[in-house]
Structures are given as C-alpha cells and as structure tokens.
Amino acid sequence: MRKVYHTYFIPLILILLLFLFTIFSILIHNRDLGSDSTALERIKRTGFLRLITDNSIHTYYYYNGRPTGFEYELALAFADFLHVDLDVVAPGWNNMFATLEQGKGDFIASGLVITREGIEKVNFSIPYMTTQQHVIHHQQDTGPEKIEDLASLTLHVNRGTPYHHRLNEIKASGIPLNYILYHNMPAEELIRMVHDKEIKYTIAANTVALMSQRYYPDIRIGIPIREKESLAWAVRKNDPEMLEQVNKFFLHAVQTGLIQRLTDKYFSNIQNSDPFDLKKFHQRIETRLPEYKPLIHKEAEKYGLDWKLMAAIVYQESQFDPEAVSLNNVKGLMQVTSIAAEEMGLSNMVNPTESIKAGIRYFDKMTKKFEHIDDDHEKIPFALASYNVGYGHVSDAVRIAEEMGLDPGKWQNLKKTLPLLSKPGYYTKVRYGYARGWESVQYVERILTYYDILKQKEMN
Image (cartoon, rainbow, N blue to C red; front, side, top):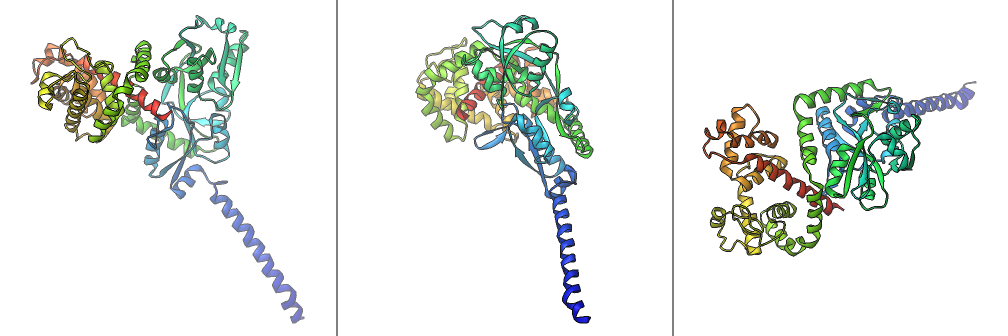
C-alpha cells in the first residue's frame, strides 16, 4: 500500500500543485498586462504614460529629429504631472479608439471633438479648446454661401471624423449631399489636395485650416457648417480614476498658464497671415532664396543659429532683394541700420555678402542679451523685436511689463507692452522714449510665420 502511495498519489499531488501554480501565474501575468488593473495603476507600476494620437501639424510630428506639436507638448506636461515618462502610439485616426479599447494606450489626445458618437465609446475630459468646422476651397473656386449650397458640391472628408458626422447630420436634415470618404487621411492632406486642385472641397476645423494656409496659400476658408465645438481628451469608459487625473491636470494647466502658453506658441499668429503675402513668400522661396541660401546657412552656422530663421528675417526685411530700400532709407538684404552697420563694421550695405554677415552677427548679439531666458521659443521673439526696434525700446517694454505685474520673460506679455511705447502716458516715463511698438509686434509675428513655413518645407 505504501508503495502504491509513493508511486501514484504523491506524483499526482505534485502534478496538481504544478497545474494550480501555472494557472495562478497566468492570472498574475494577465493582471500585469493590465487586463484587470486600471490605466493609472499600470502607469504608476511601469513608469510610462502611453499617449494615443495622430501624426498632424496641430497634434504630433517630428522636427529636427525631435517630437513636437501642441497635443504632444500638453501630454508631455501630463506625464510630468504624474511623475512618469511618455510613450507615443500613433495608429492612425481611424484606429485610435480601438487602440484605446484594446488597452494599447492610456488616453487619446488628438484634437478630439466631443460628439454623441464619441460619448458612446469613451469618457471625455473637461474641454480645453474650441474649434469650428468650415468648408475649404481653392481661391479660384466659388465657395458656398449657405449650408443648402453644399448640395451642389462633392466634399472629401476622412471617415469617422466629426466632419463626417456633421455631413451625416446635414444629410439627415433633408439636404442631399455627395461626399467621398477616406481612411486615415489627415485633414491637412485633404487641404493640400484642394490647394493642388486634386479635389475641390473638404471640411476642416478653423485651427487646422489656418495653420495649413501658411503652407498652402491658395486655399480659402469658407462658411462654417456648425456652431463651435469643444475639444477634449478621451479615456476608457470603465476607468474613472484616469478621467479624474486628466481633469485634475487640465485644472492645473489652466491655473499655471500652461495651456495658454502652448496655445500662444502654436496658434497665436495664425489669424494674422495674409494669404496673398504668403503666396508671394512661397514663390520667392523658389525664385530668390536659392541664390543666398548657402551664405545664410554658412553664417548662421557660425553662431549656432537656425538658417531658416535668418532667411525669414531676410525676407521680412527685403524680400530677398539686395537693392531694397526702406522708408527710413535703410538698405540691403537685412536692412542693417547705419548705427548697427558701423558697430558691425559694415561699409557697403547693399552688398549681399556684407549685409548677410553683418545682419546675422547683429542678431546673434541681440540674442545674447536675453540669455537669461531659457526657453528659445520665448527668447527668439525678444531678439527679433530688438533687431527691429532696438534693444533699448524692448528693455523699456520689459520694465513696463514688470510694473504691470506681468512676467517680463514672456513674449505674450511684451506683445501687450510694446505698443504702449507709442502712448504719452508710457513713453514719457521710460528711458528710450517713443517707439512704434505695434509695428515691432507685427514684424515678429510675420517672421515667426515665415520661419514656421520654412521649417515645414524642410520636413517635407
């Protein structure tokens, strides 16, 4: 009997224990993969927050080998808020909700509009921005004047987007519509197709359309097709803890001014772009810039500056015309003033080589005056304004900002105080007196727009 016990029963017990251990290990493994745990638990355990987004100029893209974009920077700040690192998953627009549902990411941040269809799939955060859908058409084509006019058009939109849902609503209201649907097609690509006359009409949010108009100046932004809509992030339906953290972060981002800073960075000057001027800029990039690009690149590299920013300055100053003369009788490609020319050792202001060398050297000098500003995004506008109106006047505007209780190291605040230098109540009390500060603000904003276009062209 004892022999039977040792021969059969003990091995059976061992086999049973091994089986139970295996089942237990599988259950623990599944829990570690996140099948039962919440997103927040997994994030804290692994130290990684997984962003689900789409590749787009207004959300997430790479520039100079580094990720950037409004939604990306906001998500990066959220990761810092949670004291973890950020991973990015970009499965394409039409796959984002499935990616979230399958647990392959923790939240979606991709310019999502809060829609009825979306509410059935996910939980939306509190809103952080508003947009409005518009018809986009080529300048040579007539746009619709009212919603009913859409019946005569063929519209092109991405499937499953708020644009698609809105067209369905219009069609259901009794207006016959003809539209062609695409899969994982970014709105800006459809806008490019309009610009290049591959299609005639698409729908896009005003923010996307205005940003795209920098690169595609022949498009026109037509009538809105619905009221303003709110943008939000999305988390899984069964994850209230993650939703709570997202909402806490947004409240923090509003209180600290983070959302305003990122909005200013990416969207502040898109409203001021003149499509006719932009078209001329695009043309002269092709016809005039190539002659001066090697020298601009070489001189910019000497000082660790981006040649594209220097080229943007040259265009703003002279439109790449070495014989350009300003209203103040300043001459040359970079319009170096007589005082700055003497300081930089420039003897012939209309000589392209001398003008570019002196101008870039002088801009580098202006940049160094703001080395206390760590963020290049903030530093560049200060240097540009100084190049235009003079460092003294910019210093006066900085002091006014301090007196008004504003952060003097933020360009958005200087945009408020520079124009005050034309008002007696202010310029009579500062060291360097009167200045047309509003012109400097416009000057900086235009250069930043040209700079952005050149960066985008280099990416493409």
